[in-house]
Length: 199
Image 1 (cartoon, rainbow, N blue to C red):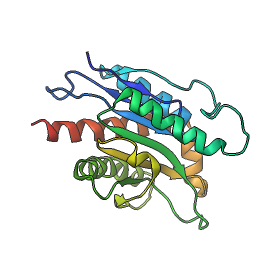
Image 2 (cartoon, one colour; image 1 turned 60 degrees about the horizontal axis):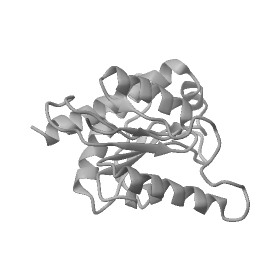
Image 3 (tube, rainbow, N blue to C red; image 1 turned 90 degrees about the horizontal axis):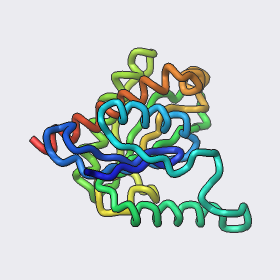
């Protein structure tokens, strides 16, 4: 059996037979995306994935809010990743930008990870298709230098699932219906990537 892992604001998972090959493990982690993590957990379980939540409340992983709590939170995430030894990492977030005109989802990957790039492209395609139904223009997957992309030697992506600074995106992100659609798109992107990888 392949172990799966989900963080309160993200998920780590894998499966045995979704693509007909070994799917290994995927880690999904993030901040301020807890409700989406639960939606994705449900979606993955329905697809046969085993999912484990690491944070079931809004509490962080830093202990106290004393000086350096953010660094402690990030280091604890790294420890969890090292303990889990995932084969994929997906970090879920919600974006904010000074201009309220910016909309849609965008996926980032480490510049030195070809598999991360491939996973990001599959995810970006599915998310663009979803946001297009709400009138948002498509975005391009991009290289990024984020902490979560360098925690483990495996394909890792960071997904900004929409802009809280845009009234329409914020409205969508606050609805259970949209979070379920996002979860389906994320799951679809993962399966597409794994199907291509293990063909």
